Length: 217
Image (cartoon, rainbow, N blue to C red; front, side, top):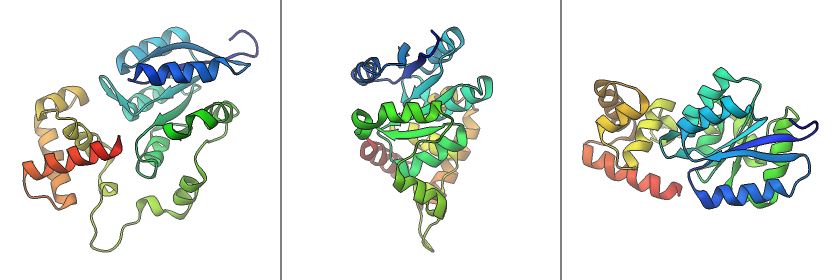
């Protein structure tokens, strides 16, 4: 786009975060913001219309989650670079994001000093991750668990999405609609989540999910 200028689409449900990212990118020669949105649905339309070089994706969106958006964009636009920018726990989500098709993961706490470097790295065909997460992935730490322990890490990607939405106060029917699943399938996921986390009731599941969501910021 415009010769050596690379275009960036920002997908984040917080307007102030989008403004901050726009300011950082605007100050960098060779980069420009081609659009912004907090909606997963609108993001897909904007990608189709603008064909950005890089999409910066938050994991929490108004009408969906970033992991699902990454999977869809990777499937339809494999040439576009995808960079996650999130407050969510990098040790839990970075590897899942990479498996979904992301090319990098940056925590919002590091945005001011590192987002431009992260964008440039993924544009150059490299992966951007913090040194700590590189070490975790190489060592297999993200998948290892102490004997007898239970953890959010034990959940599959779909179970994690359901757990995430439970923590946001969504009903089973609302979760089914958002994830394009049947109510019965969501109920099955809820039971598997309870079993994996050692929970015995719907109330425990709700409290655990809400607490986890609050801790994630």
